[in-house]
Length: 366
Length: 271
Image (cartoon, rainbow over all chains, first blue to last red; front, side, top):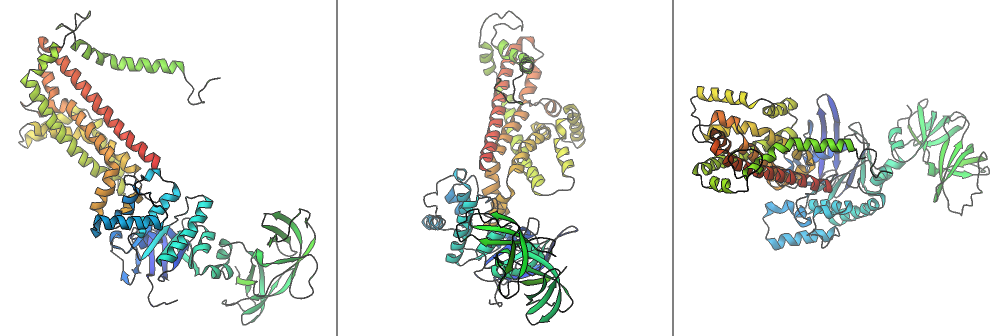
């Protein structure tokens, strides 16, 4: 990615409310045309950071550059960004068309031109013919689209979205996710998207910054975050993960050999970590990366255990495998690619677990 | 089985009490219009006959019209000024985290509970010390103090009920504070503003004590009534005038409450 000319450059930005530090010196760049998500639990500072980009919150220290221009002291109404609010903030006293055209006043457009732009936006968000409706005649999903259209008509350099799908039910949310992605790709505008839903962030984003306690824990692509989480906190926040504590026996380039009590030595990917012989390490693997065998495989590394519990979830089943030496059972997710009859109760049967090369990763031990 | 829920179950004793309460509260007031149509200068039963003469007599008096005009002028001025001040106060209280916010609200509301006679005397002393001559202007000043709590109490819930992100959205869409106020804040609080105008006008129109202390020869309508009470022969005419004032006041307050509530319900439907 071109590091030379980011659309947004956040440079050591911090925010304090009295003694409380809401944002710890964050530095990050967002590139042109990127779909960038700020992901974190509530209270992690993601919304505060977004509101700082919009100019709705003051920046205590550091500087935010948007398209190269420093933004400190620039009020929200002079920033080249627009926002979709969590509550949508549709003006109840205006109809749909006037809501969408709200920001056009300063451009002093002739009426025809203005109506044309509004109609264009209405069709972009698939609400043709809704211009005369009043805001209180609209459903949540429709209000959401109007909030989008009202921001997009301003042709912002960056669109800021504050949990815009949070208030919608599951089906509508999935439909809106697709639409958001489509809009972002057709318009080529940079989106900065705040969410607490990790699945949503993985689905939509080019890059994700995982936030906690006012700090960015890791910033990466969805695959990067999922496959190479930097630490245990991120690994357990994004998806599910099995952890096994052990000790590094030897280190050889990208690979390390880690000894886990009760299991033995495992070859583990340690790329990008500074682990060396004698360090405590945490070995991690995703539930879907383990395969289950009912007879012992002929070769390769494996973990032996017994089935403790099996849960049928339709498209997949979850198994808990008790492994001697581990204090928690390993969670495994298997695709139900054959018809399940309910007779596959494998409880307390011995099984062997294998994995493909590189699926076992290490995180720094605690 | 009873149709009501546990909380809404009808209670006969309470219903009777409520009816009695309303009767005791408003019966004396109902005597005023009743006797204003009675064909006798004495207020006593039995009624002697129906007449509208007292109203006709009232309409023909120059001094009544003059006093009414004074009351309207003071009322209009006071309602507009106190509503503007009320809007600014309500906005400041809800939009900024002011230190000692509750104390400020308390001070604004204080005139509701301080006896008017104390405020009246205090203002009279102050104004005469400053060498200000009494006139309708000084009456208006007194009424402003009396009306501010009503204006703030009507407007504050409006501003509090407004979603803060409305104003933020306007700023985000390129409008500065001034335009945001006129394009978003003002239309959203408009029902409250109208209610405040009507309510403060009524309060000023009916106010007596401040007017008593602070007016000179130009009297307001309540002052006129007071001055006519000395003449027993005028009493039925005063009853007629009082009936009219009652009616207008009831109507204005009713409309004010209705507009204010209508607006609030509208917003409920939206959120």
